[in-house]
Length: 209
Image (cartoon, rainbow, N blue to C red; front, side):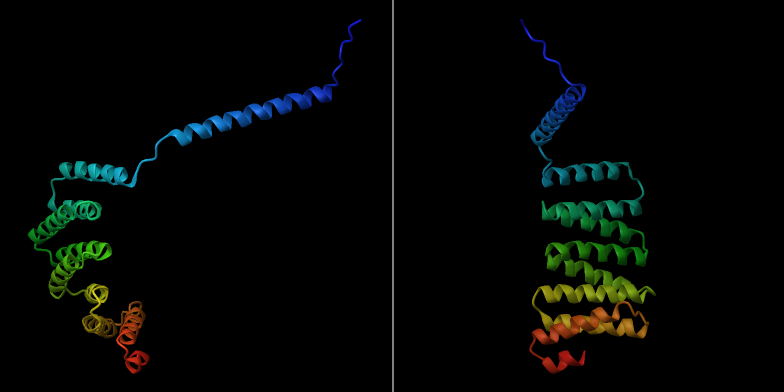
């Protein structure tokens, strides 16, 4: 005589719960596997997408002053891809600013272009734009920007291993900051000057700062 097995309700509930957990676990494994199979967008592809987007915006922009930030962003994107194109876009940004005859706009545009090339190690190009920025900054009444540009020039010279030139511009920056009571920038100048003198082996001068 065949015996019919009787399942306890609690046991059946436990089995269903276990089966449900297994199904959920399997589904997550499938989803995870699918995600792994999707190719990640490379850094180069991301840059290209950004470049294409900026170029589209540039084509739709008719006002020169509004083109400046787009040119600068394109210069920044191309700086790690094709530097000659980066230089060209930076020049375009400067030309747009220069045509405005706005000394503040020219100052800021040149300074931003200089920062792009300082960060990428294109020191000659960085100096070119920082000195242009300094020239126009001297025509404005903005000592904080003037001091910042002087510090940027000093940073370039420090990266070039030219500590005496770096000291010259940090001292100028410190003077502008002190004369105009720009207290948030003074400590950085002092620290940089102290470090420079220490690198030159002038411990006494370093301690003075």
